[in-house]
Length: 278
Image (cartoon, helix red, strand yellow):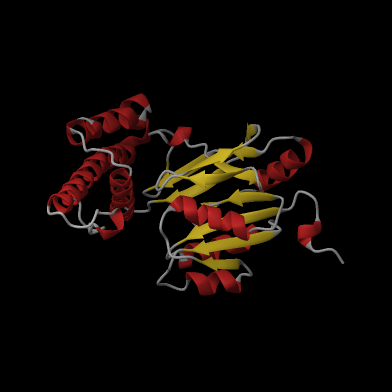
């Protein structure tokens, strides 16, 4: 008898996880439509690995260094013709699954962008920049690799299409969740900037926060999302200030180490608490 992976146009659902026990317990049964499930765990302290294995996923335990490397590990561990990347707090719909199956059978694209519909702070957003969230999530295995430390991108060879159906994204249930995610992501981005020798700029702290607020609230019509949208737009602007402050602190620390004639500083040796905003 042939296995599911022997079928042409088989699909691996790939999930990058870190302390996602509750999300995985709900998500993984919903991925039964996939021919294979791969979960790359970055060192969870909860029961994420146990939950993933209980639901039949192939688990790859890999200490987290950056998102691109975690996603590439999922590619290396997959055996299907296609790989569908889905985050732990996202959910596929029946319409999306049907479209995926149809498009990969009838078209010659190497990958597909998938629209995301986000629920933030418990409310479905229609604007605030979320309307432009159409990442590349479905790709033919062997068509490319991921790159980038934080806002990773997939460098693909071949044509790219766009699905009509969307993924449901249940993210940032509270403002506390926003702050936790902001601290983690801004630390990673600050480290990446120093690693590529990007100097801090005065405009990073005093111009970019206002521009980000204007971009989301006015240009991306965040004001139409109501008070919850205004809060999200304001916090998005604040996160730019947090990033600029962490970048400046790491940069100064790196220069101080070099000035003291220590061995050449590396980002791995620099310290910045993920809980520090300034």
